[in-house]
Image 1 (cartoon, rainbow, N blue to C red):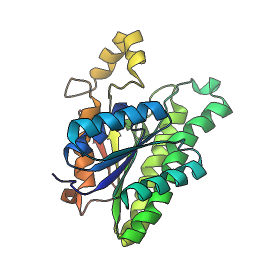
Image 2: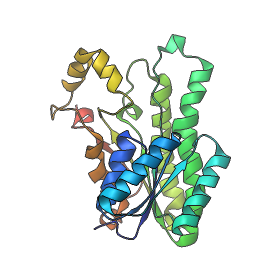
Image 3: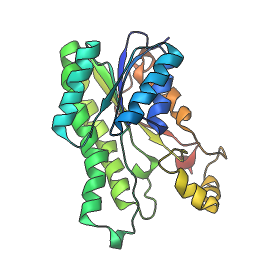
Image 4: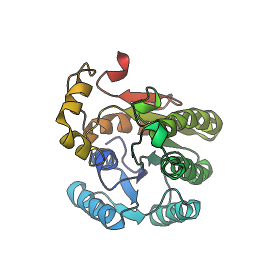
Amino acid sequence: MRLKGKVALVTGGWRGNGRGIAEGFAREGACLALADINGEGVRQTAQELAACYGVETDAVQVDVGEPAAVEAMVRQVVERFGRIDILVNNAGIMPTSPFLDLTHDLWHQVLRVNLDGAFFCSLAVAKIMAQQGGGTIINITSMAGFQAPPNNAAYATSKGGLHMLTRAMAVDLAPYGIRVNAIAPGIILTDLNRHIFEADPARLERNLVRVPMGRIGYPNDLAGAAIFLACDDSAYVTGISLPVDGGYLAR
């Protein structure tokens, strides 16, 4: 078990990519602190993973866009487990809008959760990691941070910003033994986007034409990459954004 004895905090851990990554960590023996704005949902997920994998879990309801709430979350996790070895910044939203219809409110809402939230969580947790002698932070970005999809200006900007935040943190935090990397998912079927593909099945087919591996991804496909970046197998890896996209960005 590559993460035995480690404590992992996963935001957006209720469902989708967050749950898939958390489940992978649980299989590798990590203690889990799952955080989400949906308190009831994340508590249920934490209970299910504890029962299935026999690991210790905790659940925190949090709005990652609120710095005070993030700091309270980190205090709760440290009080429960004594440390934080791994942070996964997965919490995010993906509303769409044509650029000419994009409102100030929607723009700020997306950046508040996707970019500000990752910054607030990283800052609070990095202070703990620096005191304890190291740790690893994994940001969940998107292929939209490299190649802008239509009607997603706010989302693509938030993920592009998170890509650069990853690199900047990797440089600044390396002297403290903290590694910072990112995973850039491709077309991953989650509860967040399922309704889009169900409403327009042809859209999925159009997207899959660009995927050399010829299939859609699932949250569990991200787990292996997250485990690698979280464990000592990647001890000399920092500042990267690893696409997990079936080859989409290779074209």
